[in-house]
Image (cartoon, rainbow, N blue to C red):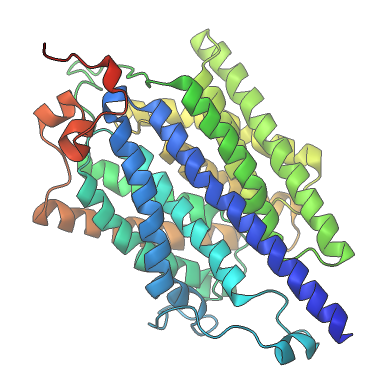
Amino acid sequence: MNEFAELSYALDTFYFLICGVLVMWMAAGFSMLEAGLVRSKNTAEILTKNIALFSIACTMYLLVGYYLMYSSAAGGFIPNLGFLIGAENSVDAVTAGGDDAPYYSMRSDFFFQVVFVATAMSIVSGAVAERMKLWAFLAFAVVMTAVIYPVSGYWTWGGGWISAIGFSDYAGSGIVHMAGAAAALAGVLVLGPRKGKYGKDGSIRAIPGANLPLATLGTFILWMGWFGFNGGSELKMSDVGSANAVAQVMVNTNAAAAGGVIAALILAKLWFRKADLTMALNGGLAGLVAITAGPSAPSAFAAMLIGIVGGLLVVASIVMLDKLKLDDPVGAISVHGVVGIWGCLAVPLTNADATFGAQIIGMAGIFAWVFTASLIVWLILKAVMGVRVTEEEEYEGVDIAECGMEAYPEFSASSK
């Protein structure tokens, strides 16, 4: 029995770590997606944001965030303040048996959770691209990953009040994706749109991305990483039930993404009379976000339908936000926010243990906290250091203004 417990512990820990690596790889996906959807003059800066925010998220969640999220009383509202991860599980605790026996390493849990925090922060970077000061963004990343996300994370996955009312979010449609979108929305409202995006007559001007092959690669990387995002959220696979659940989650994740691509592509063709690649890419991501809240319960066909609705919603949302003059260069608020809401609402359709009431209250609590706290931080940063580059710097590109280099220098005019 003891040997079996140790073997299961080792297997589940290894599985958890590998899934964490897949989710970490999503940082590359976000980087490539955003680098492809911004103009070439802003590429180096958006890449700098992505590697810096990942590093900040890992550091702040280690120092403060993980303890806030997972070391507080069940059903509570205000988390305990503490630091670092805590003691690792002992051999005796693992082999003792019973429901309370740990079945994976504390360090593997931290590693899996920390890459989720970085994912939430990555959502913000694309929405505020091409006009935000780099260091203002990084200052926000410190607060977001140390405090804002961990507090709502405690309320939900950490066993706080939202968890106590029965809110169900398997892998984070609301907890990760909608939260990231709420922070992004607050930033976009404070920042304002890019110069030239909206005409005085109310017209909407498309600002094409510089590298659609790169954006497509980023989408496929995110699609791949999502198998770790959702699959790892089963938390174990060392028994038949868990292994079957992991397989179902991965099949459903893939089916929803495929459904989202097809739906967005068809709607774009009907609406815009063209097969819009960017809408197809966002449709795939929307399908992934939509299924994330409940990938274990539906059949593969139902998961595909959930993804299809997500793909339709994201196209409509991107158009709607443009009409509202909310400038989001990569469609992050639509993909992760609007579709994140749909993902949470879809859970009771296939999971009898979930209720629409709990889902709505839980989402409202997450959104209200993250949006309000983020708005306050953005406004403080605006007053203290400014959040937007000058009009001249925006025109020339933030690569030179913020990083002193260009991602594609061979396209620049050089003096003779």
